[in-house]
Length: 124
Image (cartoon, rainbow, N blue to C red):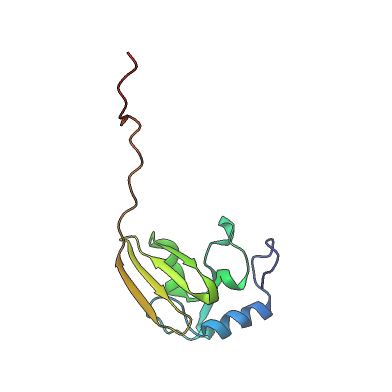
């Protein structure tokens, strides 16, 4: 269910779908009721995120602000499953029913290749 990319604010029918799916804030461990939550684009609208069910989640004001300020990442999978990675590389998966799983600390990404590391001898 997608609304035009040009439309940042979801129509009432889409708001209802998100509220029915989530019920409460999707911040880890937060159970703030949907009436006290905002709809948040998981991938920010200004960064190309679409106004669609698979890119919207409920967040209380505090969790909404911290999502944008803490330097972590959140992306959304099927059926409202959210994948979180904190700035310290702790990874979590959260579900619309409020349950979540910790995946521990994830390894850092591999370093970029060294441009001067060439196993072949020089041509001279």
